[in-house]
Length: 305
Image (cartoon, rainbow, N blue to C red):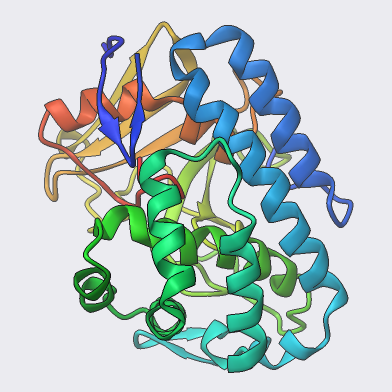
């Protein structure tokens, strides 16, 4: 189905769910990246940067685990009209801006020239950097900031997303409310209200091929109906199509003809060593193929792919 192709994506040229220990998932993700590098050399540049980014995010995650000043974000509230239990907009302004500046300064050297140039602009424009982060935590558009900084919107969006992901993952562990995770039609994360990044298929004690969705921000997982579009709720079989490729036998593109959206799914029954968030990002050729078919991804990953 998919073929190897070249594309400019955020400056790159393409030629288990979470672990149980406090920082174990970040180490596990890095190990998975290194393994995939040996099998998929055509995305080597992307994976090299992603491995460095994971190490950088791990530092933010560890700091967020230790910090108590961010606890105010762990509270019941509303995000874009939805009930959530994690409100990043409540993060202390000064603390979050200082941490964001440090994150931007520490951008891995393997980043593309485009990302490095935007990082310099953000460091030279602290007011716009603060506005960018405020827009991100409140779910608002960053178009105005992108215009002021005269930079690509998609590439600019990398910075707040990459920064907030590990913070959200750390804080979601502190949620004490009983959050419903078995609502089969919940299209947004029950914890933070964000869109799903990837679907996962696996067997459990009660269900064969159980489908769960993984949040694009806090990486939480929740159950979702097997034959249902996570964008529009379409359930008619003739509207739901699946596409696979020999290069990634444990992944598939799940397409909805009704809304023309797609999400990738990782089948852990085929490859139990896969790490859903990593394999989703690494399988770039599936996204390139889907784009050629005029599909729109439900949620782009941290690298804008």
